[in-house]
Image (cartoon, rainbow, N blue to C red):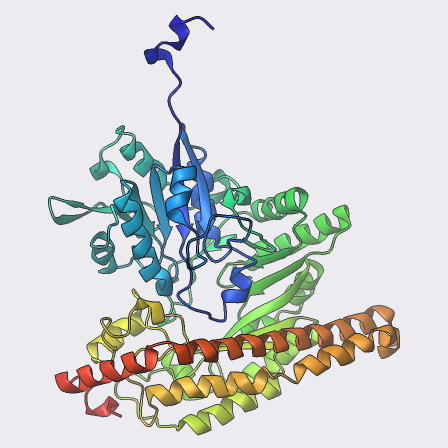
Length: 539
């Protein structure tokens, strides 16, 4: 190459890098085990879009799935200072999809800001007034909505090719004041977006791959941040995602992140048929988990199509077996009918994961009193009758941007953030003054009593028993296939329930070491001194 070709003006422009960080959970929780084998879909989608921007590369660091020899700090977490030395990033984006990880997010933002790196944050946490909070914690740009298109404009801004005021869907500080640009149009043409590229997740070991087809949910639950009319990608796009993951990584375990599977019935049936045909073509059986409404049990054609498509587990948001609480949540369900529909799912061959909320706060004017002991009995009775395979019972979480948080704030029932911070917003801790006769302490203890009864050490012996009985599975039924399915389900259930016991045991140990009890006492003292949480909700 001639010397003139190598002169300064003709040198190729240095490529720049965006690093997206998924912050670590603050403590052990029910998601910790799965998080070590999965990752979040949103950051991967944004990083994949960045790779289409000229002059930019992207990578994802998932602090909860960081196992392939990445540099670590003294606490065993990713060493971001060393990462920045080894692979300098020109900008760092932070995933704020889980409120409990936000303190770690701000810690990392401070670190990178000190290294002279531009910082960006997005996710469900940054709704409403939390935009201001983010900008006050070393975040240069906050993206409250979908990021695939917005990030391209932001990178152009960092390159000096665009003015921040012209980028829709961001917030930033200008001379000390907050500037919010108009909201962008919601994405609808999902098939125009690139297929998520999981090779961008560095140092991770992924076994369960998140996939998605639908954004939004029309149920508008008071406690949920996912709102709006559902928007759909084509079934072809989802099948292409699965095919790419299987053919590239040998993936066979998938979690469909859509809030409600089957919202678009006709296209969902077509999707199931396409998945069935693809698995036949490659002679491979996938295991797919979906979140679904109980009333889909009435759709026999849908259930049959789901089984043929490789869907083996359904995650169902029961929320509560108590009729009064279901009404407060705007759930048009009856406990007796919920049990019947669960049994239909089980008879159809699905494993059922039940998701519950304990101690949901009643609306003002509703007279309802029930002791923790009676609630525990109702939960246990329902779980036993419904025969769900695995359960998670969480406390209500007044997440930012939800109607429930707004309602509790107006009632002065939220514990102050200066005492009970965002790191406790994971469903394991009481976060507000509950309805009498419940207390924060009795709510937390009740969850552990329910889960402790379900996940027991005795399941360790069941694993051994079913393992030794394996040679006899052909005799469990007149059909070898049915006998295998029966044995496998019982063995699988024992393994997961014993694993649940181990998790609960670790969580109790971590809780005893932690400072939450003292912080709760301080929060209650502060509220009492301020005269908040009026008489109707006093303890």
